[in-house]
Length: 166
Ligand code: FES
Image (tube, rainbow, N blue to C red; front, side, top):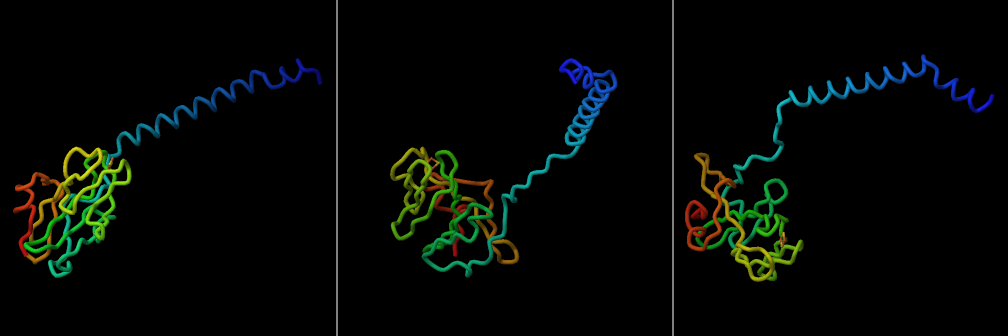
């Protein structure tokens, strides 16, 4: 078979129409798929910003707990005077810093910010201290952390609702 015969064989009117209708069918399926996706509600799968964090006695005096770090990006510190919920999100560009309790600091390895255990910036590019979430007790005695309410200013962050007296 010569080259022109091969080309003519594949470019018959029937083959052209078959390819054309397959392309149109693909286009219609893609259009329908995107329309169905558009009609479906956009659901956020983020964890709720308010969560129950167990009981006061679950947290030993003088410790930082990372029990809620993976799910909620929160550390709970129990210190003399009460409990504090730190939001474990760096105030520079949002990485999750690492708690280095032995070294009395919180370190963000993304760009090298160091925070004190109070959340204040020691060094690095983070412009403001780490935030603390509102924390209180529910009627059933469990701790409730509300990450929507947050504070990082000294003075304000050290009292209710950012400090749960216990
Ligand atoms: S995100 Fe933490 S230092 Fe940049």
